[in-house]
Image (cartoon, rainbow, N blue to C red; front, side, top):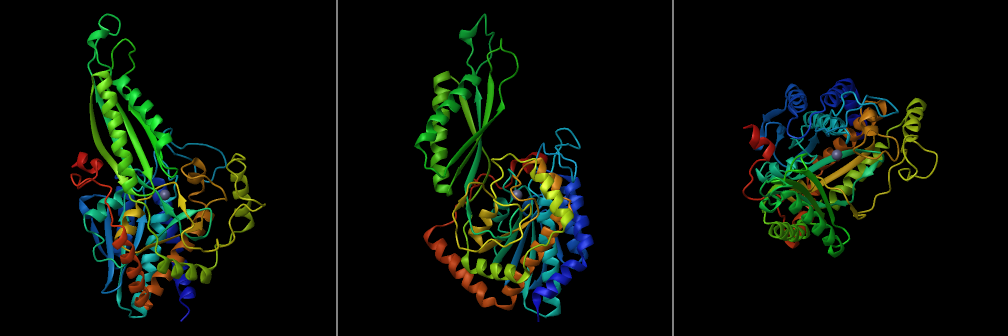
Length: 465
Ligand SMILES: [Zn+2]
């Protein structure tokens, strides 16, 4: 049985319905924890295909699971569908052109991500039935990857307790297995409270929360020199205390995002940042309140699963683009700066698989796939959905998200994930090997949840209940 061939045919057979779902999610452009229509279109499709769907899992309204089959191995396919704020953009345009000013957009291609994972899950189900194989496939509808860390809450709720292996992907400009680590991250609000007063007549009676917040930022910027290279320290001022210069600002707030190679490093950094905040409050006679916002773990890799996925990718080859698609990608590339154009040569779209080698280092972003990767052996691939060098979280990604280039990359990812899962169902001994590799790592480095024990639900969810 040529499973690569049969999986390709199954995915292509339903291509129109997959493209429709992906384009609809692109249109909805729902941001973290508000992905009601996006999660529903995916959940109802899986239900229609014979999966047992559980909605609002872990108490999160836009999280769901869809299960088919029974017994070992339980293979999870992770899907995301959240958009980003302020990235509204017309489709298939080679210039910046928002549909809705300050509207939202799929700047990370998660419309493709959730849909390819859906297509993979449906295809695996069809093979399980045809071949009467033992095993379970479960789609995980994961909200709020962007700035919400939804998967960490799903892990904390025990939703992955019976899973043996997890498979996912990310839309990209390249083809290949993603054998790189990403940074752990933790995001925190620091709210300063002082005392308002007339800034001209009675300044001595006021205590400036704005001063405190600025002093905290100065302190944190001095901290940078004394951090290891792979850390990142970002902040956004979320409340300046108002627009009146003649009022001593009684409240101010700043949001800090800390990143590091693992949560131990991040938590150490957090303690130092907290001390800086306390110092700033002490200097200004203000009070500081600290609250957790979101976080995710670093990604831990699994070589056993990666080898299976790499083999599957090689069998399936790469998405093939026509000259019209090449021309469109070339036009998009004209909007990049010289600095953004890192790939050499004349090509506008990737046409090879990046050679596989295990653990090529750290990419200094973060993903909540990290939390799943510490609970179950996890593997990810990427496929070419966008012109080479397209920077993420930009209008160019949004613009390309409904093109035939993106659709081809998406369907290809479904095939690679599908074949990887089928290989695991056919060879359960490989799953056992992957789990042993995972256990060995965990024995040395236990998993730390990025979420404090006091938070069972994301604050966005708590606020609407
Ligand atoms: Zn993303």
